[in-house]
Image 1 (tube, rainbow, N blue to C red):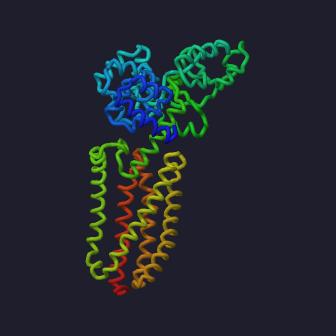
Image 2: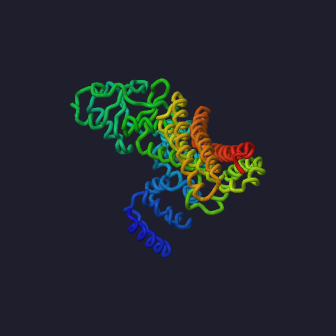
Image 3: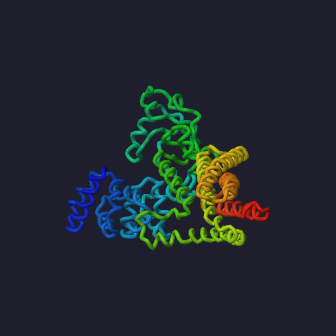
Length: 453
């Protein structure tokens, strides 16, 4: 949907809401994809969203509910009856239904589970047992599986039957009597095969699969590595439990990218751009309070060298330069290291190699930038020894940046924590404290030995 069309739709929609013209509203929304309807919601007031949502067909409403942001979803769910919610959830795939039900209060979740079909309810309850960030938590149980002794014709008939209730059928999963996965047949290969042949003759007997407890990031890497659109999920005994499709993985990738992005900016992952100011304040204040505490740690280092600064006041002008350059260099290192960890490019066994490389890069960048800073300070008429201080302190702090920007994410990874948490809280503290300490500490030494006056 183009911006011009979107703007026209919003203006027209608001006008129709004012007139309470339900028929015209439905006529306007019917040609739109659920994701486009969800985008329109972002430009409407809360009452308008609720009003429009109440007019949507359950099938459309179920898709729109999955496309809107979490705060909007909560408000829309709260605005409808349990019967209406049950009808909407009943239209969803099991993985999506599990996601929605997991967010509901216990009693409401129980009512919805009792209201949908018993078969789907049983499948959803199974999915709810798995952690949400694992293969089991993002898989769906809707799939086409058939016994290994079936013929091609029987398999095709099974696909035709299942296609009425299952979307995006890419593969047929071949199983034994006890549902142990033994192979996969792509749909295009199935269609081209001779009908009388056993399906096991054309199956891939060594399919790519994931265990039910595999982390969702690892699942995403498998999709990327093997360029696949769906993967089966099995238990420890190899029994087929469900499948993960590419649309589920795209959601995971988006979630993980923005989660890391938010964490590196010390933001709560629940915050959204259109949130009320009060909510943003509530979510941001705790993180800023933590940063304030670390800032005082850096300030305490400056306090230690208070007499040095009073002796050579010019030092105060260049302190932020050293600390700021360290922070920038650390951000570069963190970005590269965290990305490598997230994509599986960097394993802990390569930690020493990467650490040495980043320290060397920090040293070289410190020397080069230190030379430029020293020349700039001299041209500004500052004592040339302060330029020497800048040069040495820059080297020291960019080495600290390279070391801390590498080692802290690796340590967090070692302890099963999110490496992105290292960005502003730990590493910036290291470069602030390191920058001030190296610059002012060297200045104190220069004063002691008469090199600076």
